[in-house]
Image 1 (cartoon, one colour):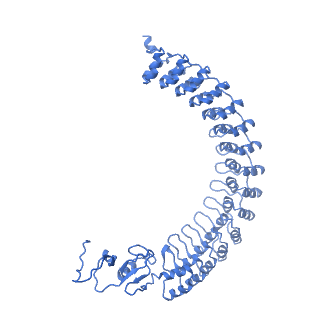
Image 2: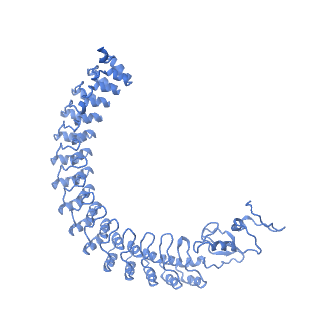
Image 3: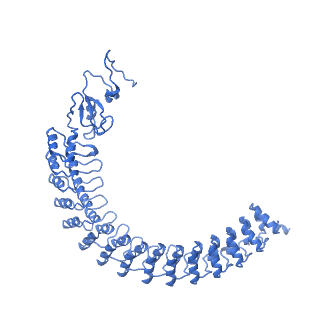
Length: 594
């Protein structure tokens, strides 16, 4: 029970089932002196909930017109039917559904009947639509005109999106409805929640007749959302030259820019709206406006591979070498995106092929990095700088081709006589990067072309050092076969054999031993040998190969620590046992001297 004291029923009275009881009374019980009028809702869900008329009416009073809902299903309840008579209960706030259906289907006779019955023409239906909005959606001009004459509000905006009858007609291209609304003094420049005006909606959908009608009515040609977009931008987007010409004739701003600096010409190029590009150029639009990022229409044409737009802009003498904020030019972006036709057009027009971005990347560098072989070939043919250095890392196009393992581009650059040994900021060469990334085919091409086998980085590292460190056995094999020095000391005097033993790359150790690498070469800082480091790291297979090759099993550090001692200290018992079996001393040299 709910704890509310109720008047007891008279003896012998019929008890109604819960389904027959008004749910509002159940929630807020009150006594009655007279029998209530029972009504049933006709909601869109056909729920048919029963209420007492005074209960549901009292609830409606506290709800805004057009937002009144069934107390049970929360749907629009009109019309309310009297259960005693079967007739709709008159309520001007909730006109009969027949009125809305008539507006929706264009039934002018039914509209007239509903108006004669005193229907509320401005009541809001489901989805926030008024009768005038419904008629505008469907393009029923005669219904629109009749509703206007009956006092329908031409400027009512839907709560959901701010749409008005005029913006709806403009968007859907219902020109006659739009003209009727204009005649009724509808607000021409009202904005929806996105900030778009009826003129923008018409232009965005390419509804030329609506655009012309709004222009003739003196709608604001440049009004729009806060981002600065105008009807002209939308006409450019849809390639609607008729809309664009109409806007031009009445003075739309050719140079209008959004907050990001985007102009109608930029939009036309971006959307490949060729006819609008022609029209804008002939009308005198700025060919080189820059966006917030510094991009120009020509840059966008090259980026998007819109060759026809590119041709038009080149012919109109757009700036071929305009740089964006990163320093990229149309040639640069065409090479990066592999847009070979755009690249040809730009080069033939005289664009600079050696421009560099802020970090020093050239068109050739980007083409090589993106594996765009045709663009590389074209740039080489046109005499591009083969050795332009990327500032950030110091890499050349040849270096990047070796890194990307693109043998076709590498061949092209080698044949064009790019510098094989140009070093990056760390002193690395293309051969180093090929060895590091195990790009064996690129490594072979570089070796056959005469790359310096023993070029050293600023740390003294050779390509053989790097291949041994990475365990790239095939690269080690090819470098050795080509005559690489196996004993060049790197940082701290470490040799390729030392590094291979340290990393546990047994196959590399074996190859280096067979090639005659110094088995007992010492690290300068402490005198460690390849065998010592293998024992320390627990690399037993490497240790086996070194012992078998007769490396010194007792070669101690400068402090006297022997391979056996370090293996024991590090807990590498298998290595310690192997060394004992090979005859290694168990004590340190310091202990022997006592």
